[in-house]
Image 1: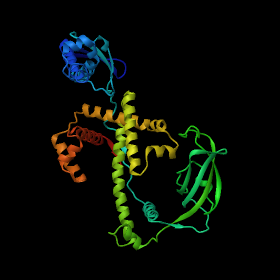
Image 2 (image 1 turned 180 degrees about the vertical axis):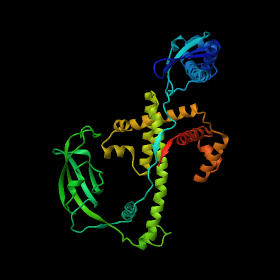
Image 3 (image 1 turned 135 degrees about the horizontal axis):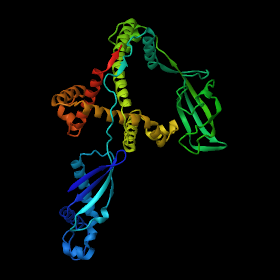
Length: 430
């Protein structure tokens, strides 16, 4: 077998693959061995029909499609190895109609390959490291967050709803006089001001008391996922069944000990929070610096990103988002319902980040290649030891979780080393 690669416009090219007659005949033989096990012919057990009789009865052409399904994927894979290209999408195969027993066979594959960025400046990039000063106001804000987390909900007797209260409501939505599907709820817990409902809904409950009802009139967003509701004015008949308010614990030494058993007083808690926040700001500053360098290097490069790479990255991001939602007890379908989005809207919302992810990945890969940044066995060993400590797993268990190969690990390490290269060669000001 031989293959020839011809690059055309952009990142698209054509593989021309020549398959000798010997390989064609082998593929037909394999096709017969497969097909004969599946056919019922009177006088023969399955799999025992002689080949000459099969070809006389059905024709050798009856084996061609199965033979092509056997031959083409292997020939295409071998052609990729031979030419050294890196496809990023499924190929468009053409020319299979010329397939015939005893004859050489040529077919083509239209392929989208991984683009090669034209690197711009990536050494000597100027960046400024963020400050790591922590103010007393920032410390107090964190303590207030802790207070809010420890708050208890207390029923409000004969008191009006204010922003921040949690209500229990029954509601039903109507378009005109007709109730619409999915617009009814009972004993629904809603925190006023959370933005969980359609814009304008929660604000109209402010001032109501338990036992009171109100017609809440809202307009669905134009881009709402349910077309029959998008842009429409709707009336929700709402009954407030219960109102609860947050009661904050007392801010004292006992509260401090409850938050952190290692401290003895509120002042000690403040000091510890300040110290931890400084360290976190230092970590965040280092991370932000690296991100800025990577973004600048990627922005300076010229690259045409294939739509297929962006599309695949978007779907990876949606899968990741769906997994995070599941951890919070929600599904993508519920998210679409509450947010007013649909899959297409979420797809397009994620497109800019997906394109940037692909761009950054390709540029860092190109920089690593240009600077001969390599991953050694010692690098891999050190990373496995680090991961073993983090996850409480042996190196063998981690490798098994990675599919028995270090390829993913090597790529991650190479990326880390490339980013460190950018940092070491940057002009950093405090």
